[in-house]
Amino acid sequence: GRKKLEGFDKEKLDSSIADQCRALLLSLLLNCAACSLQLGEPRAKQTVTMCSKALALDASSVKAFFRRAMAHKLLDDHEAAVADLRSALRLEPANQDVMKEIVKLAGVEVGE
Image 1 (cartoon, rainbow, N blue to C red):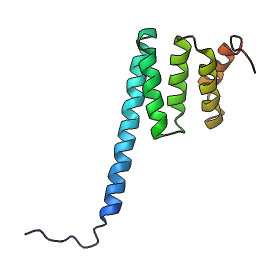
Image 2 (cartoon, rainbow, N blue to C red):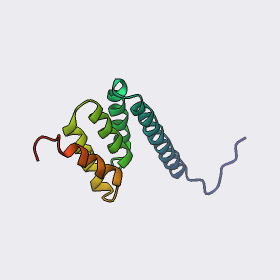
Image 3 (cartoon, rainbow, N blue to C red):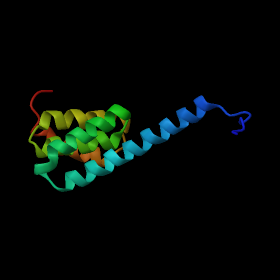
């Protein structure tokens, strides 16, 4: 028969497995978004979707905000791109890539 494991905490194990699965899914989504972004405008909407799903898993993912911003830029949605870049910059104020993109888009941005 089965032996009962002493000190075994099923809830902790389940929580740990769930955390690992979320981390793997986040990584997968971000990597797929990076690949999709390299394919350019034809795949930009898919990139936006993948990054949005990544942000649903981790609302503090600078990579997800940045990649989604780049996809919005490809789709000529500069307002959404700047909004995502600002979110990334709030999370990581010293990020040079984010700052460079905000400066590039600042001249095109309408409002603010």
